[in-house]
Image (cartoon, rainbow, N blue to C red):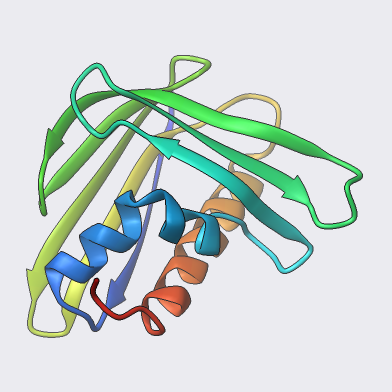
Length: 139
């Protein structure tokens, strides 16, 4: 199965980036690709064998779906690996560097949408994550 890799760099600390990526109250603020979508709810049991569910909906109520999966591997501040509902593997790496924290996400493609559309959608969500991180203060 083909794999797409996307990435962004966030100029925040590793603890803040990790918190923003993994805490449901933060996930709801960034887990959508455009302003006409939202994430009204998220649950996250971040441990191997644990599950997550992020509800994604059009803001006008015309469409929605659950993005859900099961964690395969979790190394805090380094790696999250999970399978989504259809069995595809997703790998997320967090690397601390001179420009900030680089988040690299690799995912197996599905066969409904074109690879380019998938890349654009996932990258838009990652870009939204970066934007939202800029407004988060640590708890």
